[in-house]
Length: 112
Length: 115
Image (cartoon, rainbow over all chains, first blue to last red; front, side, top):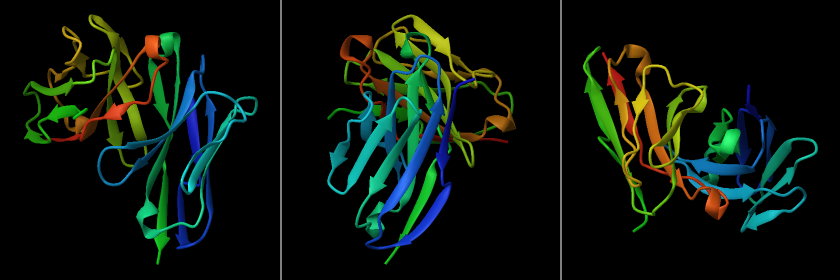
């Protein structure tokens, strides 16, 4: 059975801190790993990673994939209160790459 | 504007009364899928469709039906809803195999309550 596990499940930090969110996976026929941010509405896309060792960056957010060890991390530097959200990791795989399996999510709370 | 549109956004219904949640996308995406989101369980895939007339089960398909007669629409049908189907439902779409399976774009969600 395909499985995606995120850690920690929740995290409380203060503005300016740096956080690292983890995502490990066991998925048949891996195609890509995706990170989403969800703020009480639909998830919004952050990154898609397909190759090992190549960092994707967008402003203060960055992510990297390790296909050998089957995990990914999402880093957020200089956190702001607007970063407070649930961060979701999802892995695409399965026959014809139709399955998208999500982790439970990490609830990030950033205090002023 | 590129978007995935779900209707209705909120629905309260009674056990056993058939209902359909519609999903439509205007991006010419091949791939569409349905998810339910429950506290502590994240998003779980119900069904997905790789293209018109091609559908397959996700992780939690029991009690649901789908159809894909046109590329833009992918309705979710609950033939006989039960209280354990009370949940937040999301539809999503993306480009498929030809474009390398881009990121999934999500609709705004449908909050369903079955009493």
